[in-house]
Length: 351
Ligand code: NAD
Ligand code: TYD
Image (cartoon, rainbow, N blue to C red; front, side, top):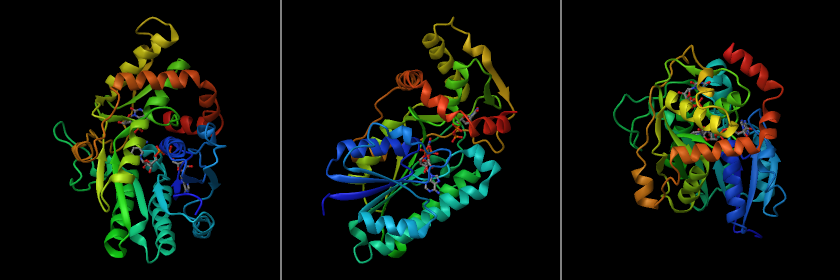
């Protein structure tokens, strides 16, 4: 075999997946990274311009629901391991179209595992199936406490219900068939290349255009923010050194109320745009709350930090500055992804 591993990364043209592809392609020249992505509205090959001509990188456009296409990819590239990111990932979209989430997140994951199981028959223990999941499967916290790896699942939105179901299927494949699986559940990611349906890039883009900043409810919901590059570093660590069959929680130790975060973004953007402090804050508009809006997510990442020595590398302020710098320097990227279908989505969601 030409390469030591042929790793299939699904959803590699999306936000987190593209950072993972970049890290793996650059860090492991002896691995072949095959990026499989359907290129939905969330997939964007512009995210990968800097690695697209690397010798150890291949892109294949395919849907994880398409069994024959996945079988062909396993055959053609002799896939040795999978890192599975592909998903429908936005809670608000799951409220309007839950079936799309069921199809991709549950059926798609099981379809992928079926193909992997057949391709790796007789040597399942030698191949890793890594499933990327979310802390939202644990439900919603009150003011106290944290999500641990042992916290009972209690998903509250169609998105988190679909991710919880896929996690259960992945564990079932380990228990029933002996598949060598690893799962990580992480908190809210942020950083370059995030599609502006999610809070942070949406606010940055709206501030840039002096548009209203829609804060759901009273803005006191709390999220823990994890810088996307720290996330994919953790995944690389778990993929190589985490225990088979186990779950690892990944969190940034950066809990903020939404309104505190929006204030921070406003102040940093005022700086960036050279406008008087307080200008962007005037754009804040409290809007109707999201139905079933989870109150708080917070992660206990002790297992990951003690077993594998991973730590988040940035404070939330450092991370937000880096993120704003990236969006400022890549306005073309934002202009491309906010043309066309995004406008209709925005109208429908926020009118
Ligand atoms: P994203 O929406 O930016 O990207 C998803 C990618 O999957 C896109 O490139 C899309 O084209 C692709 N895709 C969607 N449906 C597909 C299909 N049927 N077949 C093939 N490809 C398909 O998502 P993200 O934010 O990068 O999230 C990646 C993973 O991480 C998801 O599994 C998500 O549940 C999980 N996660 C995300 C966050 C977060 O804060 N963004 C937090 C925790 C967990
Ligand atoms: P989001 O980025 O959609 O991630 P998630 O729902 O997976 O946590 O939202 C983060 C938080 O920001 C969440 O509490 C909902 C809130 N929010 C707003 O207040 N306004 C918005 O326009 C969006 C998209 C989110």
